[in-house]
Length: 586
Ligand code: ATP
Ligand code: MG
Image 1 (tube, rainbow, N blue to C red):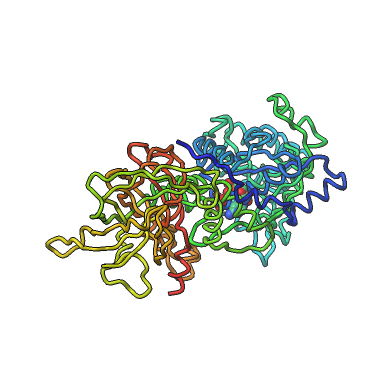
Image 2 (image 1 turned 135 degrees about the horizontal axis):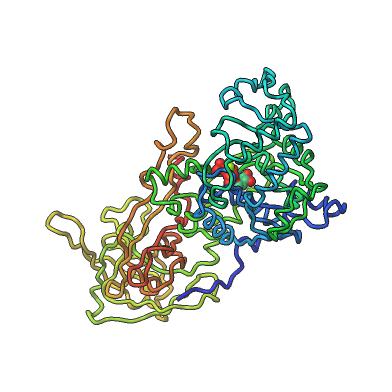
């Protein structure tokens, strides 16, 4: 069974025209005729799965293209062989689609390896690149510091011919890893360290996931990235703030290589049948998305997986997109978060509660209701006969009749939540207590008439009576009692495993290192608890990824991988209310 989604999603509701400084620049460029079509790209490195931070870059790049009738490429930035894996490439494609976007072109930086190589030869011929023999450590020593200028390498004045010869030797695999580097000849005294003769190519005899052993040299990020943008005709190259100081270098490479006016450099791309319309891109920086109680670094997420702190990249505790998906988060909720956060150059940390608020908002509107009991206590209604059995129509959604009705079986023996009963009730307790009354959701008012305990004094069962005068259609149906509790018929209930997830870290800034602790010391041991629970039948026989609100408990999703109709497994996406505000305040 699958539940239709007849209502507007939270992000449809907020689909008003988005305003931020980047969209403003793009709109101005379209209005002035600088560009006829906006062309963006999302350029992840396939060295891990995407996380919630990437969602910001995805929604921005794909969103702008979609809103303004442009194009957005998905480009796998695969210039670091060894760390990259085709598994991650497939995962990234999947996650982008899950978020609701489709790319114009799918590209790899490695599609342009020949372009990068020819462009490097051009730079050497133009006298603005040279082969250096300094090893990485020496190069660091020559580079200088923020306060001291660097020094010229002794190899900086090699002739063009000698440089061409050495670079071709690098390409032919004649030199050992790290023994030579191709560098741009810019300015070793520049106030911007990125311009102190940055590396263009290094020797790395490592097989590449796309090109195999074809290349013993690989281009550096700062060189490959801007030329890939230029190759694809990217108009606005949106990246995070840490690249602000790299922008002069970005422009330097684009201008000095000048793909637009040198088509001989990109013949291989044309020959491969890839769209090639080089243009000069403009880099614009925006702030990263940081989320409290979580980590947005692929390296650290990889460490959590590698060291077994979680069960995989898609563990529902992970803030990877696949973790969030398995946890039951909707693409609409993630997009809503990104809309709420907005785009600026201001670095900030978004409270995890904002993300939870977004998913509650979306799921409240889009999830059918069901009853489940997570910590069961038996309740026997002694004034019903052993054979008593009826099914009652329940609305699937309290506010939206389009969700329709379902049949819920009711009988003499029920499961209720253990904490909906208190033998010694605290002040203000409005649920069930000895000789007290409470409303059973959809049935009527019951009174607690007896407690059954085992030899050790532990409560094992409650007895109660149902007031027939309070049933639907009876004169007392509207009689008021303070509390309402949910229940499941014991005879009809379906056993399920429920995984109660919570935040992965128990402090807001796990990797701040302010307290001198390693970030792993802040893992929340309560972030996953597994309980055996009971479901009403209509909650059990559903497809994986079916989401429900279990009344009074929270939003839950049938596990994408392990759920089966005859052996249900549900994950708690989020509780109905924020339980962390209270904890933080106490
Ligand atoms: P990580 O440090 O987690 O590996 P990254 O920036 O190295 O992240 P990439 O795969 O290179 O990861 O990122 C692809 C794109 O996503 C880049 O344009 C990058 O700026 C952007 N991005 C990565 N993390 C965030 C974030 N937290 N907020 C916004 N954009 C991000
Ligand atoms: Mg990176």
